[in-house]
Image (cartoon, rainbow, N blue to C red; front, side):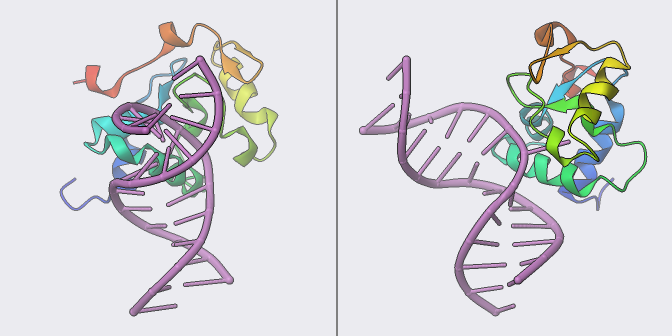
Length: 108
DNA sequence: ACACTGACCACTG
DNA sequence: CCAGTGGCCAGTG
């Protein structure tokens, strides 16, 4: 999208995340050419709650931690959604995160 | 119209 | 190694 805003680009990338896989704020920001704007990715996710087909639960921080869980309808929803896809979560962190990590750059 | 801040991350001292 | 700080975009008071 030529006229897409940074936020719209973020949503597009998030929609590409395969079921059962996760990615990070930094990876998305880097893929969009704004490695220093990972913080805004989180902001974009916060604003994407009302949008359909935006699996915000598949976006975690660099350590695989569910930092955004508090922004869901209820804190446990993020973990429940992930576990529903076969992603194991323990102590707010994705198990085997390095193995389940999905880099948007390798989607090409 | 200005200042602040937010689901982060990496660099500096 | 740990604490502090800058950066980037859009929305809100």
